Length: 261
Image 1 (cartoon, rainbow, N blue to C red):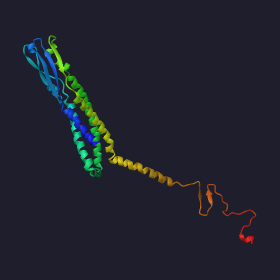
Image 2: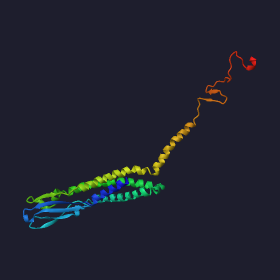
Image 3: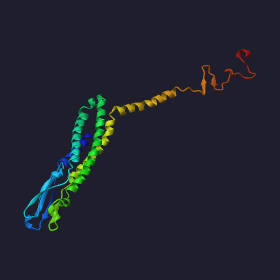
Image 4: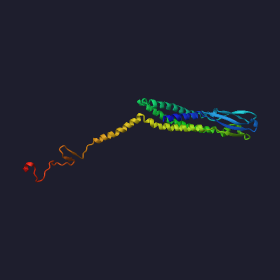
């Protein structure tokens, strides 16, 4: 389990933190000398789009102006990458402990409890960070859509000028990062049970459940049997006991061997 978490954490922060994209738009001015038919706009992690700028023609003589994109999505992206990095480091340490120091890990009952709490926290943080990053990625796609970027260029608002989009960014890497984020959540959530089995909470509950049948068997043996009992003299006594003598005699028969003589 730790190896899977280790690898998936690497894929998550690598696909998000290492992303860089580009889109291209064209501005065809009425005065052809002022036109720019290939304007490249580069952006990437941490997606502070309001700091990304490009030069666009004003279509008035040969003048250009600087245009900025809109939006700042760095908080969600950096939060996602931070959780991925810390998850990677913790899973690396946990793997070393489970493989080489398992006996020392089980010696102190507090260590499995700490491991359990950390696993629960990471599961929750993966869910939150992946959801936040998925929403931020959706907004990044809208903000870097070439059709939306054209609306930021003042020259494109003039109907005499023609603006168009040449190509948009590729989103396969960032889409993969979101998938790995939710897969990490599933792995950490599934790992909660295996870590919980090492805690004193689970072991104490197992011992308590195992002692219950023994107690019930002991109470059953102490219950007296009141229906009937045999005494040492060989007579059988019940609740409605008979007070007849235990010797067997026949009516009119000899009472002893001496009488027969």
